[in-house]
Image 1 (cartoon, rainbow, N blue to C red):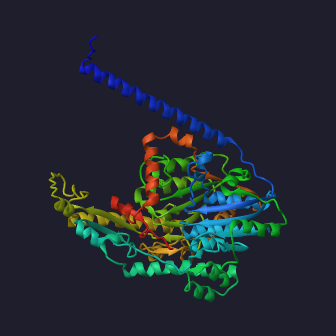
Image 2: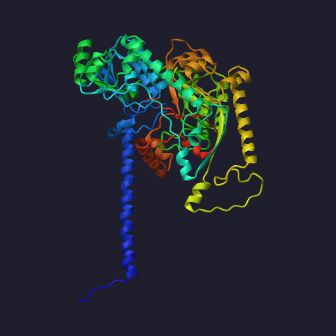
Image 3: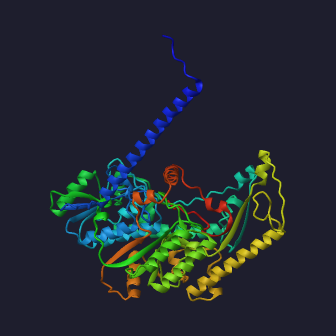
Length: 588
């Protein structure tokens, strides 16, 4: 029998059908697996967690502690995704005070990267828990200053015997890119109103200006001074002794103990042995904060915690899996209207953690917030930073509460625009253009700003600055001159902000709740149910309301950000008129 020979076209067609079948099968399997995973997640999300009797609340706090609720994955193999927010920690510790099932708490801070205002909030929450009389212990592993700051609220601090207490003072660094940009042939064109509004300096200078150095020294003095006084009080030592000890750090575990900075060296099982002796209970059980905050019942008057977290931008945003989209004018304005129209909300706490951003978006958001303020009692609570546009959206005319370590103010405006003509020349790229209108090319990134364009832009930012100062003056019941004197783009810490009249009261969520309950005519001793807006979203909600591509991109981008931090000044590269904090501050 002779062999059968198929035409080439038929062979290719059969192969294409085979590959298409494999691809379809793969996609069907992927979709089916995805549906099963999501279904399991919804089952776990609906399941009420149980809290055992004689529990020890384990507050393991790693890395970032967000203000806004991240996506709730609710899968047993992805429980690390159920990150507690600042509100979750607040509500959990207050519930644990009166919960007979909780007999003690252990805090385990590790590699915290949050700001010093959020640290003050959590430490105040720990201090409130201690008032219940229940033991609060701290277990440190490779601790830095932020971890130790929280641990200092505990009755007893433990450190692993071979570990190091990495407390050695505070560092504030600033990178300047003018030299690199010169080599690349990129010229950043910057204009600003306010002699302290020096965000563009990272592109136009090689070191700190005298104004920058003056302000950052004040920032560092505030954080260092508050840290030393807090540690001194908790360890029963004079402040001068703590400052002298810091100059001797870092410390081995034995050195930390001999200097009275910790109480004992040991491991987790030894801490539980100590707690059993302290409480007289031999069958202590562990309950993680990630389980407990889901089990805390929601009782009391519904007060909205409206969270504005991140840089302010105009537009719609993606609202995918990413938790770093910032305050986008479109969706955030809709959230404000949702709060305003909710008849069950008795009052609102606007929680701001933002360095500012787009000036137009900030103004749109402030307009919506003023409508909200007219409809419901409102109080502003500032977190790590509420500066520039972040301060702008806070000036509804309602009381403002900040922490002593909150970075605020920076009332100023700047314009930035890159000119990449020199880079194009280095790369051999030629660009030609035709225009109609004298200033038609003022936004082109390959043409230097003309004198006429510079004058026009300067007039625009002057007008934006004047409007900013006027609105602050109206909200804070001061004259234009009074605000202009403390504006000029200058950054203030919360303590100075209060002295200058930019802030009404120093405190955290408890202070804001007291004020908003008073404004709403609610009992001072009544229970408060803080309802977070935007609400925590489930994996199902995200996937049903976003494209697969945006969700995958968000996950990939988040992993990249975990490895490579967002460089300073990224927001400035977009250009335009900005109400943006001059610095991306991280004091460590």
